[in-house]
Length: 255
Image 1: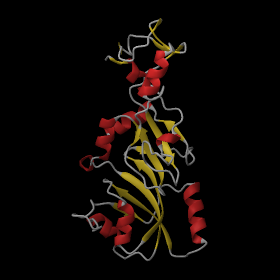
Image 2 (image 1 turned 30 degrees about the vertical axis):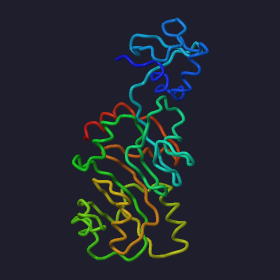
Image 3 (image 1 turned 30 degrees about the horizontal axis):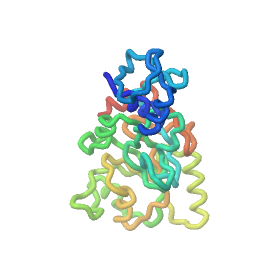
């Protein structure tokens, strides 16, 4: 696969295309040991040795990260005024990373960051039925038929009911962050319930709207899994790591 030199350098994290062209002009780049100033030059990452300031540029086609998204950060690739989840990935080699789906600003938990558009599309497609698991702290009095409501699908004001979801009053993952949030919230109110929801679609504010339709309010929401990938318990909010080869294969097999 051949690619323009300026695009190759930009994709490899050396700046925007205009920034790359500026240091090409002053001779900081070489291809196969020869200085190269032409950004339109085609290079083959598998065959050509590209160097910037005498350091070899390592090309990575795809990157996959697991992020423990903290509250207060927006799920976007870039924003003019606010920090995004992609900004948290300091070790990224590519400039075309994006979050697979979105978590609300105040929602925490597992977020996959990648530049693999095909995988992301399949993971998010309702037709693939990729299950996502959330723990929620909810205020209010639950209706007796809450489990059945989720299983049947809930009217949240869209053209059709939500897809059937799994609801439980037990939580499969209870980490220190969920406990700390529950302890903090319970100091001010007594009508709190910790529960778990598993959905296979991702409508706007879907889980919050499902609970609202039942007369309840989500006080805290956290995603713990997506398909076969579970949030690494060793990651604190704001921390991340690359997915292992096994995890990438598991994601691919789930779609």
